[in-house]
Picture (cartoon, helix red, strand yellow):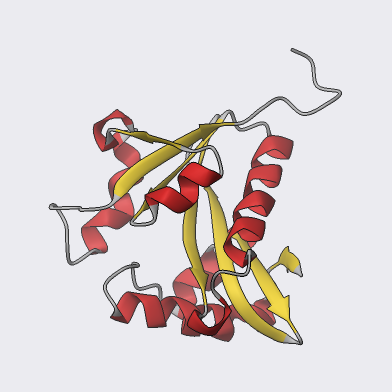
Length: 157
């Protein structure tokens, strides 16, 4: 089940993120960083255990970023990542965001969700604030993907 994260989820989110950070495929985030942005996070809970996480970070009045998408290795390929991203996109739509992007090594996954590959240079420069924390900076090898959020029913055109 996907739900918004609560403070009690921070240790599990940290554990999941740290496993991916140690592999060099995700930025390290301290428990303090996770607490600071807790309202951005969704978690996937299965049988009382957090097995996946994803965050929607608002970058500007019309753009958000999918961040920190991670699913424990034993639970991959079960649709959990898709459910987490969908929850973020639903929230983006309800907030009035027009576009959502992600920086990823899993381009095919995001393509299945209708994200399109774009040149990273087209993204606003202020999104690179966290990138300086990455060991790969400034030689980022992630791909940028973006999706346009459809108007929700009942909204003015």
